[in-house]
Image (tube, rainbow, N blue to C red):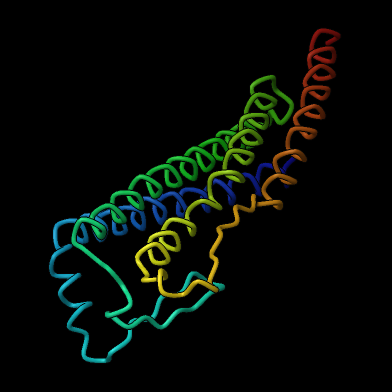
Length: 201
């Protein structure tokens, strides 16, 4: 039990640091996106007057070098993209902070020496649900800028080009969520045994 309390205390501190990092990172990203909305006209002008002749877009898998003449880009388009990304950022940040909070609650239960309390079962089950939601939401994030860039390209003159978008759920997060759901059953059984032991004593 001593090791469990020690590890729970360390993990709790790590989660506190991680929470601050997520909050600060999300705030900086939100400020950047808000600046993109405000300075949309400047961004469009800079793109069309680019001295390098090409801008590079990458989503981690695909990289495009785009000439300004190949793109129909307006300030409204940039504002719309930034607004969509701002909403997506808010959803992902909320899910991440909720997950950190639930894990911190679980560590608190362990620090108090109550790993098999009824509230621990509920916490583990909630972590599993958040993980499953995460698995379906996060794959949408890279699709937003990709959809925007591809949609702004002049593809009408390229009849041989067909573009489709693939939505792939995060399989690892689904497996983790299902595993945690099963683990919650173990904690539930442990809570029942702990209750029986307390009643016997």
